[in-house]
Amino acid sequence: MTEISSVAVIGLGYIGLPTAAILAGSGLRVHGVDVNQHTVDAVNAGSVPFVEPDLDRFVQKAVAGGLLSAATQAPAADAFIVAVPTPFHADKSPDLSYIEAAGRSLAPRLRGGELVILESTSPPGATERLAEVIHEARPDLAEAGTLLFAHCPERVLPGKVMTELVTNDRIVGGSSKAAAEAAKGLYETFCRGEILLTNLRTAEMAKLVENSFRDVNIAFANELSMISRDLDIDVWELIELANHHPRVNILQPGPGVGGHCIAVDPWFIVDAAPSAARIIRSAREVNDSKPEWVIDQVKVKAFDVQQATGRAPVVAALGLAFKPNIDDLRESPALNIAAAMAEQFTGSTILAVEPHVDELPASLAGRDNVELVDPMTAIERADIVVLLVDHAAFADLKPLAAGKHVVDTRGQWREARVL
Ligand code: SAJ
Image (cartoon, rainbow, N blue to C red):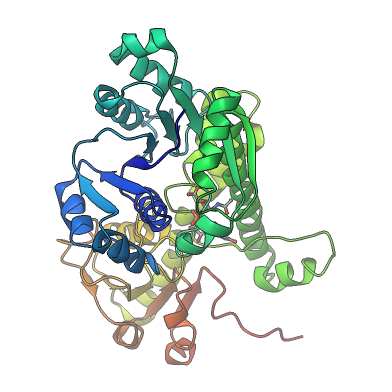
């Protein structure tokens, strides 16, 4: 194929928009494409419709320099990057409808010889499915056989996307050696990490395996927290001590695993190999059971308050995001726990605290027993303080909770070890 000078990025979300902005920053002409008009308008105005450190600076510069613009329809380009969601169905099987829709939307723009990259985290076989959809829409190009397909999973950590896009190593799976080499050439424009070439399915699986590895390790920590509770052991101290072993590195327990990656991707492996993927499935089940376990801990405290005061407790839920120091509430166990408490604790007021949002999210808004308040007010008014997210803003607030019942799901306020 000829050298790539223009790229269309389909899907301007947490991955697509940073990738579009960084490609434009390398001097390529980048067309952002999104079905959401609000997102398109925001990008064309040089702004970012979600929080990601530094991204706004990149977008502003790229739009002002005329190298990045957005639209709801894909234009012609030398390369296409598909970065759309891959959720799962109710039965946990992967939903490829967004990928298929992206393929159908770009197919009419193809002239032959383009590189089509799937970046969305996908089950094994998804890039071949994208190729199939495009070839079905364009039998002329199927016959010519000139299109190049690649899978280049993103591996960036929300909150550090603009740094990790540049520094992380990158896996590139190609439908052929030429496809893999072409995609490598594109990523080399901004990626300083190593770019490793393989085939499509191995690249797809590598991404799923990375997130499953983390999920299994978090499940181990979460299981330890439940065992430790039964044995009256401080799990934070236990993990800290065990991690002094040179070959042990246990992760941290929490209220469950959230976000749109680690809580989703392992299911793609389970779906692809249901009887072999036993640990991976079990880890998902352990992590998914953790919010219920936290709610049970709060129920015990609520019973104590009710017995002592004769009224239902006021409960502060500190943090709603899926992890610390971000505003992302998607698949957040903290948010789900707050919503479940609002539903189940009849007579209680739930004081929701999330320093990164200005209004209650949909699952809490409209409930007359939930208020969004600042951390100090919440702690002051609460009988029970449930620390759900270890936001930096909560680190020093422990003294305010003196004399209150505390359920600390993150160990942020853990006591120093006392013999
Ligand atoms: N969590 C714990 N304990 C820990 C670490 C995390 O309970 O010790 C929880 C977090 O609170 C959160 C969830 O796990 O609810 C996931 O958070 P995370 O920081 O582990 O990961 P994500 O979802 O933000 O990003 C992950 C990353 N994958 C890996 O680290 C293997 C990132 O590199 C991927 O690019 C991203 O998924 C993705 O898009 O797939």
